[in-house]
Length: 111
Length: 112
Image 1 (tube, chains in turn green, purple):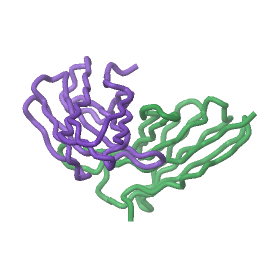
Image 2 (cartoon, chains in turn red, blue):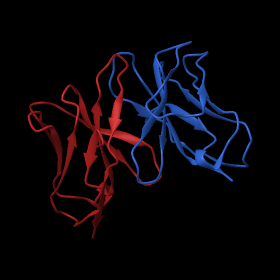
Image 3 (tube, rainbow over the protein chains, first blue to last red):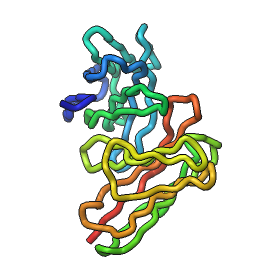
Image 4 (tube, rainbow over the protein chains, first blue to last red):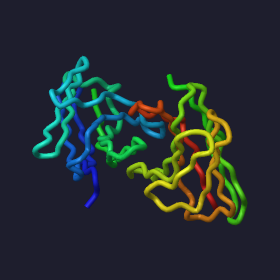
């Protein structure tokens, strides 16, 4: 079983739609959680951190459910520019800030 | 934009050749990392460093080696390239106590 699991998609949605991605992680000791965005043939970039209380950044909302060990990302009012792969990332703990990356969920927003 | 650079961006090379992938950052970050990523797959950590003269192997076994003689520089070397080394190699860095990792643009390696 992978340490971080994501639905690979693709999610094909029209502009303006609301779309949600989920991710599950296996290490109950994980303390930090993130969503990264990776455009086609580009490097990953931090989209947002995920806090226990949930957090929002414009059209993006991230939620954490520690009991069920899953993380979600909600995108409202999708734009064409949101088309990318969204990577769920979990800090595996330990002293060297090891990040465990999911394989990503692909989002394609169409006109 | 993160100030982390990788060269070359693309490399096509024959089996058995020695190659060095360069990674440099100007942010003064202590921690640096090398990841390997195949298309549509997750990133796998192959090497990391806490700082100068510190290098450790990551989760994915790799025949590559790294060095950290200067804070800003973290090159990765393959002594004898093989087709199984074909992949994308991503370098990243972070502050000593920070969790956010900043990635370079990557090197796409094709070994024939």
